[in-house]
Amino acid sequence: MTTVRERPVLDAGTLVSDELRETIASDVRAKYGHITADVAGRGVGQMLAFLAASAATDKPLSPSPLVDDFWHAFVLRTKDYADFCQAAFGKFVHHQPGFLSREEHGGGKALRARTVEAIMAAGYAVDLEFWPELEIADCSQCHANCHNSPVQNIAQAG
Image 1: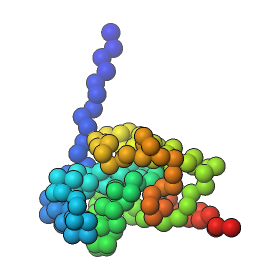
Image 2: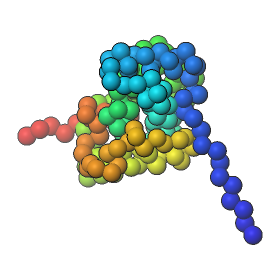
Image 3: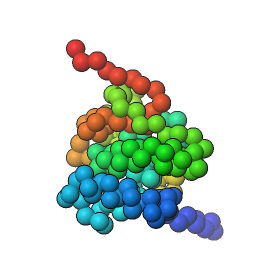
């Protein structure tokens, strides 16, 4: 008989110090007054899980609009963000606005599903409240068309 052991699901929020996690959460709450402390704390974790998954793959992944808001807040703290990327991943995870080819990467829904699968494969918890597009949309990457790809493939509007 073969026994399958599931590995524990990791809380990506622990990738940064409590102080930095609270700072990012506070930055998001200051910009978006409707976000509660609970949502902000969980959002930082989902953003960090996204970054960890992004650092572990060569394929572009895409944040949900809400996760992207947390990523923007972290990126604006440039030194903290750069130091975190180097310490956690040994490389910088670029925030690359632009459009990805639907033919090459699938639509927004397929790209977002790949992102959630990558987060789970990396061993991190997925909080589906932060990924609602999986159920309803086949849209672009996020409201600002952000992704982690180091290759910029911008589609020009005709």
